[in-house]
Image 1 (tube, rainbow, N blue to C red):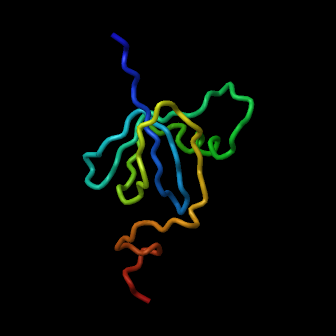
Image 2 (cartoon, one colour; image 1 turned 45 degrees about the vertical axis):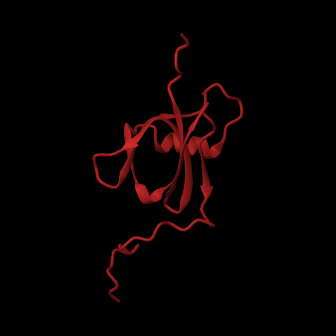
Length: 111
């Protein structure tokens, strides 16, 4: 009986106006209402000769992160994939975040 491989997930979400694409072993609905939890991030092998700067930036950003809580409205897509790919950050010029009731400046419509 063949051993079943542990699933790998590709998660695409909006963060700070940019599109993040990361790979992880664990993705599930959080106990915190309205959030998705991501654990066990996967990044490319350290032995690669070619270094992708956006993947290096993501490695540094998530280096000491045990678990991330991403708001559901920031999630673009979650895919279960056969193998890990290259994590990346893309410019989010053509993607608008889901509307929220909180303004970016923290004011509530006051001038």
